[in-house]
Every structure is written in structure tokens, then in C-alpha cells.
Length: 200
Image 1 (spheres, rainbow, N blue to C red):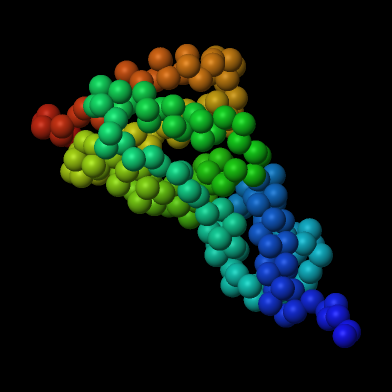
Image 2 (image 1 turned 180 degrees about the horizontal axis):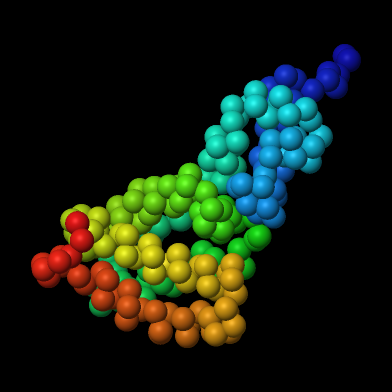
């Protein structure tokens, strides 16, 4: 019996798609959204630029697919309220510590500074992943209201520690960061929105 050595069309398509996504992540990580081009991604993948468009349609769709973000939010319903802030900070630190340069969340954060779509992606991630994860623990209304402030605190941590690498922040151990950030996170999560002037 003669064995079939030819690559099936489906296998070839999967291989091409994977090569495009790998090249795109590397390009977005090194150059950000604005300076990454379809032509450069195609060259890195060893294919014609038209193939990138065939599989993904546009640079925006390629960005969205290549940088799918899963924060792997835990179930906080069993965490005592007094320990929730520490648990949130520790989760994000564990998520980021040792993250590769092509970590989707960090690439998106870097690109969000200059690209509106990347900024929208971060908003969507926190609205669809963080807020629902916290809703069962602190109530849906409070979680929805406080998600924006919490995002600012956590993304500020990521920006200063992993992208800008501010010495005063980068030098701290995860335990030290938890001790310093948890009070601020706790104040955010404990906000009940009853104060006058709270943003809606």
C-alpha cells in the first residue's frame, strides 16, 4: 500500500494560518499596531500578503485574532470579602509575572497608547471578563460601576512594572506589591456608589 505523503488542504491551511498568527504576534509585540504592516507579517511568514488578507480580511481583524486575551479570571464567590482585594491583585501578578514579550494583554496595552481599537479591546476585556467575575462577589451593579477604576489600577500596574519598568515598581516582589496595592483595590471594590458625584 502506498502511503499518502501529500499535505491535505486543511492541514496546509491550518499551518499557514498558524504561521500568520505567530508572525503577527511577534510584529505587534516588537512594533505595536501602527507600525506593523500586512506586508511585513506576510514576509515573516514566508507567504504573499494577499494570503494574510484572505485569512483575516484586514489588519484590525488580524490584530483581534492574534491577540485574543483570556485573563483566566477565577471564581471569587468563595473568597471572603476582606481578602478579595488581595486575591485580585495576586491573580493579575501571577498572570503577568514571567509573561513572554508576545503576551496578548501586554501587547494590547502597549498598542492602546496610540491605537483606538487596541484601547477598545482593553475596555471590552475588563467589561466582559473582570466585571462578571467580580459581580457574584460584590454585586453586579457595584462590579459594573467599579470596573473602570479597577482597570485603571491594574493596567497602571502592568504599564509601570512590565512595559515602562519603573525601577521603584519593578524592584518590588509580588508579595510587596500585593501589600501596597491591596488597600487601594479594596477601597475601589468596597465603593457602594452612594456618594454624591460618583460617575455613572
